[in-house]
View (cartoon, rainbow, N blue to C red):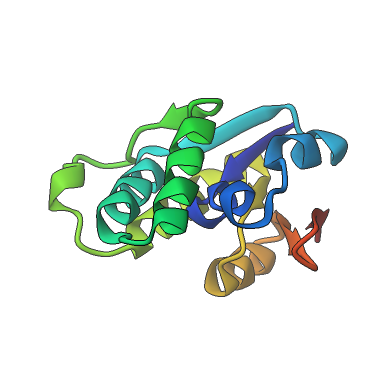
Length: 132
């Protein structure tokens, strides 16, 4: 099964020492997808963070993103011109209907996905991922 990964899911291993791919495989997911806009958000965080632990968390997230198929933007907007973080959410929502599952901890995105009947995988008790 395929799943789309949001920015905050990539940050879990650095923050909570959880192997997200082991957890996703446990839940039955074998194909991992993310978007170019999610990678862009990780790059923004890598420049924004100042504390060593935060920087390390983003570096781990960037290396984990390499295990995913990266989908390009749905339109012609250049990533360098993006201003809003909501762009990644828009891209995920655009792809979610075809893919059918999204891993995220973003409350607004979860709400939007559930309205569409899309499976949501999120962090539970800072220990493991669950499917809703």
